[in-house]
Image 1 (cartoon, rainbow over the protein chains, first blue to last red):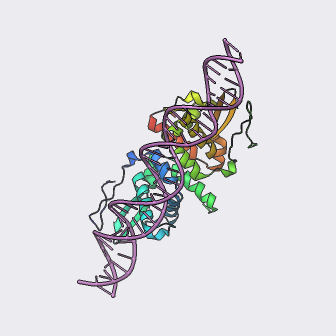
Image 2 (image 1 turned 180 degrees about the vertical axis):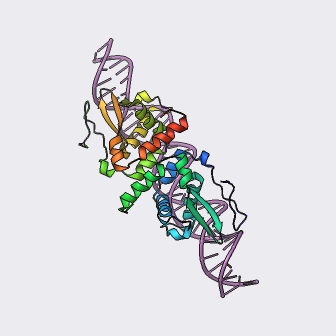
Image 3 (image 1 turned 45 degrees about the horizontal axis):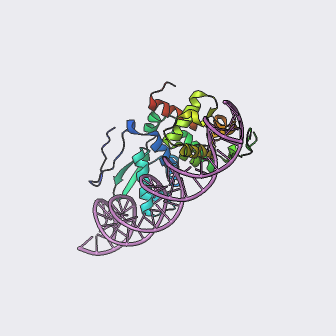
Length: 118
Length: 118
DNA sequence: GATTTAGTACGATAAACCTCGTACTACGAT
DNA sequence: ATCGTAGTACGAGGTTTATCGTACTAAATC
């Protein structure tokens, strides 16, 4: 698992923390926001890479960019370029290695709150 | 489990959310702070009720009060008066009922980070 | 009653955060 | 080459947060 950005389409780099540098407090902060929580939930539900636009977030484009960056810099999602869009994927395995049980617990609780079936 | 404060020594009331009103985002926010995380860790490690002064936090008294209130209002700790001091206890069972697996995951991760034995 | 101990209440301050709009870039399609 | 789509960068505005000091309260002790 290399950590240098996979620049499929542009020369732009996307910084991702190594798994060993994922920090509990940063992850908790990142997840403690309703918009970001809904992003994480959608990524988990669809279990496929999603472009930012697919989330239909109730915020502006720049705010959306901000939230995705927070998630990426916390080590919660992996992002890469594909054409004009940027795809995101949950770093499920990395999170499980570094913070075992945390993401499943958060996903379960939030799904339960929303009345979604597990 | 009654929710009206147990005013052992004073007439002062301490507000505690009912278990059913514990919110994921509030809990995540509350745990996403180093001082509060160390409070929760100490409460879990000592497995007994602790007075605020026993934590020896690296902040002033008023800041300490603030952090304990955040934890209490999030539903993470229960507090009651005893003499001149205020004792705190983790609401382990309530959290497990409402947000299963979350607290153990956080405690494990933080203990691992600190190099403490589980 | 006076003192000590433990903690609260009330601002104040400085940093961080969420939000937005505008201007810009990169890629794909026409 | 032009246009549209998807997203970034930057800066600003407003709110929340963490921190503190000072002044206060309640209980235990002297």
